[in-house]
Length: 227
Image (cartoon, rainbow, N blue to C red):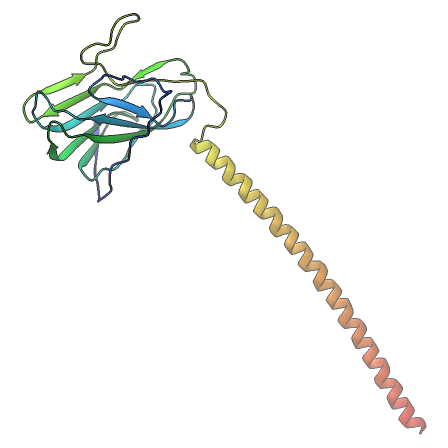
């Protein structure tokens, strides 16, 4: 198992994006707010908490990444260092470690950017979190069964919705760039063609002027000879 370490370099944590229509674990002590939930699209998940472990300051947050998530990019945060724990070719966990422990009663957020599976519409994705404190820890990893109340240590969850057709993933960006490059090439070819036409017209015009000049010069010499 490989661990890749990153340190934040003076970048502030992102603000929470409130989406009232998006399902989430409303009463969990670690909540999640997604920037989008469409299958096949990219989303930024903002995780928030405002408490410690029975009053003890928080020192780390460890996120378990669902197996269906192919990649994840943690957002740098000046209050935390970051570890990506790899299991083979995928990131299975992301660990945020507080540079200064977060006191109980103070709110903080961390973010994960990731692609949602294309075939996951209607599915619930859970992101269990282990909250480590100076004294003790809490695992937010419980899932409610259908018809049951939310468990005491509920895991943050999102519900993936149907694809909308306008997801802005890496593939879409690549296609847009290709279209832009093609349009640029066509414009360049058109400009080159216009330049060739102008050059030919000027060349022919210059040739005509030259012929006229030679003709006039010969006529002038002939006139002087006759005189």
